[in-house]
Image 1 (cartoon, one colour):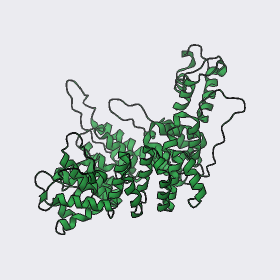
Image 2: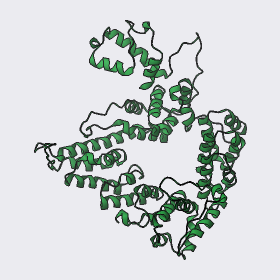
Image 3: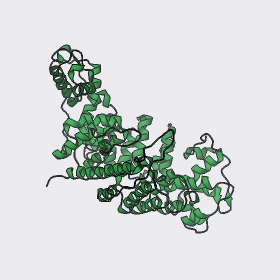
Length: 549
């Protein structure tokens, strides 16, 4: 863990800290010395090593940088967190995951046969949050270190760390990020109906506490959250206004329109753009109507005529005037108008056609790519499944021949709009038709664990890649996803594959001579064993988190 090492380097231990006055630089050096032997360290001894380990262990558990203090001066106690700790087996598992001890050393692109526990940490955290646990007190420092190192872990890690994590973050500048980035799901917030308590915390709380409070009030009474935000809106910093405004995505409704219309005049460009985006997601809003009028004037069955200028009204409604490098101004403006217009406005404009019929229409003058990309963004923003399906087209068709977009990034966003089962079936069909090389982004938006039809398609595609003579590291991204996303029930199918390896000889070249016996089959067997072992481990890990009867 980094915390103790950083603290120790910043505040070296006095000579009396060890039996012989020898101070170790950090925790990693202690571990290395314990593994290699104290005789390799000048002036070291087993007694000194153990003494120093005891000192640094205490510092690591405390999570506080050591510093001179007056006698009797102590920080206030951490707030009480009423949530239960996980069962003992799950606590041991979390310690193992945070330590990341399971990664075995590989070389030459090969992955080790043992599961990579650090990649299972997000799933453990998510499951623990679902069960309503709090982090074990002794592991909160390690959890904060992990959240500092990996931003993707922060929402879950800070929710588990809860009020104790924020308490520690006030005492250690290494974790200051938690004071602004916490989800606060475990904080002791006032009841949303406690008007006085809500107003006090809103005025005096840390940013993370205020974000959590706004979310709690929003869940109870969306209009009350908007009123609360209005009380301090003019005095908030621009970056805080942006994050508060972004929190309104949850529970967004027509009642938010007056506040968002006001935010269109904000002095921050980012705040104005976010307000415009939220208003365009409200397809009945005045802004959406204004954008529809502009877009319909540019696009129709007879052709496309992009706007000639970006006037003051367009600027106020969130249209960005200056395009990115390489984009023409008029195409840039057109795309912004179309993506902000309600998709429902196109049916009448195109003679009553449904989304599939509209998307399939030929578009002249080279505008098809621009128009379809804007419709894709609109479908994602408005969460319109019918338009998303129309723009995706058939999964088995060549991507370049799709009706809406060949971009895998845009397809992944469109897939996120579809219901879970339909999404899995579409991606499974794509994998069966096109293999795994193009499927990584699409697999990443599917619900975990993958549905049976999708899991079977992925395992079959991996088996086909082995039969074709490929190597598992050519699919390392998909293999990593499979470890985290396959249903543990698929472990049996993978174990069957390890019992029937296909051994295709690797190509031999003057620069890369290969022994005749060194084929791909052994590598695939190792990869499938690793994958099956990881699935078994995930099953055990999730079972450990189930509360005892």
